[in-house]
Amino acid sequence: MLVPAPPAARQVSSWDEALGMLRERSSDLRIAQTNVQRAGALWRQALSALLPNARLTGGIGHDLLNPDVPVLASSGSPVVGQVDGEKSPTAPLVSGTASLTQSLVNVSAWRALSAAGASEEGAKSNLQDVQRRLTLGLAQALVATVAAERTAELNRVGLRQALERAALTQRSFELGAGTQLDVVRVRQDVEVARASLISGDEQLRRAREALGLTLGLPEAVGVKTSFQLQGLVEQTRAECAPLKALSERPDLAAARSQVEAARDSKRQASAGYLPTLGLTSNLLAYTTDPGFGTVPTWSISAILSVPIWEGGLREGLVRERAALEAQASETLLRTGREAEVEVARARRSVEVSETLVKTAASAQELAERTDQLTRRAFEVGRGSSLELVQSGAALRQAQLALALREFELVQARLSAFLTEARCDW
Figure (cartoon, rainbow, N blue to C red):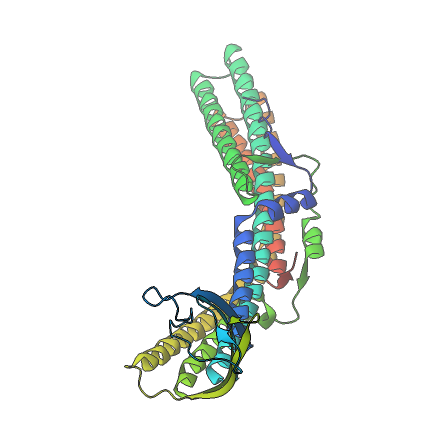
């Protein structure tokens, strides 16, 4: 069990390598990117209601009961008479229609376009927030894996020290300087150290699996010994930029965009009560005999549409959009409160972690001195096995506590920076 834990089949050696794997395989990133594409497509759909709409249709019409009577394919209406006194419609009749419509006054469509634009901006801000959270999650997963590697190493050191104490106690017992109780106590401490080692190895495997899932891989991923953990904060600064104000944080910007989109959506529903004005032009052409064809009509019309009663549909839409706006506003307030608490907690955690590292370092130094003095006293027959076991257990705990506190400090600094940063890969 003193043999080092086997390395993972796949390992990362640098922050750039890990970030590249995350960009390539992250499902959350892909979902956020497709949401931006979808929002852009919805904006284009909303814009289409304000742009000209041209359509060309064609067909051939044949009257089954009166084969000699030419009929329009679009309506089935017969076409009688001659054109220009010389040309007659052919039977069957091949006809085509070109139509062009243009909205002149449509407040509802303009509001819909504004709402779609706000939704697109919200999707882009949400993408930046996802990138920020993925960066933080990746950094924390790397730190957790390195911490688990270090813990597994310290557990083996603790087991080796426990075995050395057991050998020392056994020798003292064989020489008559100890008792059977001393041997049992120390052996019990060895089993406790073994249990800690087994538990630490399982935590290492889980940390590697969590890192693999973060990187989008269904397998355990380890960290090479050459990985520079201390420069992780500086490396994240190359990918993310600090914010000038907390209000610029992407999640808050996304929430504000959703409020704006919901407000414009409600205005769109309310604008449905207003009349609309549009322009329509239609051109009709069909085949003639003799000649290739003719264009008998080309019309242009202005259409004014005034809504009168829709069975309460418009009222229901306005009430629904008003509720959505209220929900978006409350979400913005909640997100703002959570962001303020998160930032304050992240700033405070750096100071707390620095203090805890100093305390843990002092505790480890005292535990080492205590263990040395206890072993020396036991060797000369002035200490008990209970004191020897207790000092060994205290040393193991102090070593683990210091290692964990150092990794917690790195995580605290990462969180403090990324809670007030914008990441744009």
